[in-house]
Length: 106
Image 1: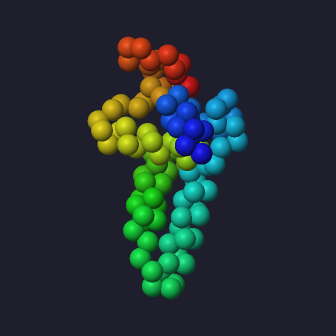
Image 2: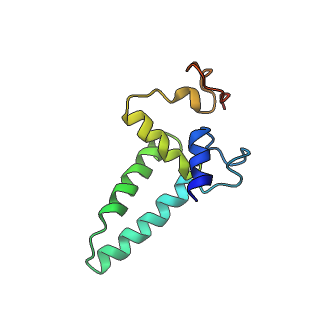
């Protein structure tokens, strides 16, 4: 798992259908699943702090229009939280201008 998702993240490929992503697992589906997990936890009075964190990250990604992207795209949020402009890594983004970056824009 870490190799596949690590490579997707490193190569900035988060769109289902891209060579490294294949069919992918959409963020929208991850949000549905984590919401179900939280519902079960709430029904049996079990706190789910990690599930709450994931739900927040998934909601944030969805709000940015990334719901159809592979769930590895949550890494984009970490980059944004660090002050990195990820617009060049997204479909329709400008060309990548970082020196040494060999990843073509999507």
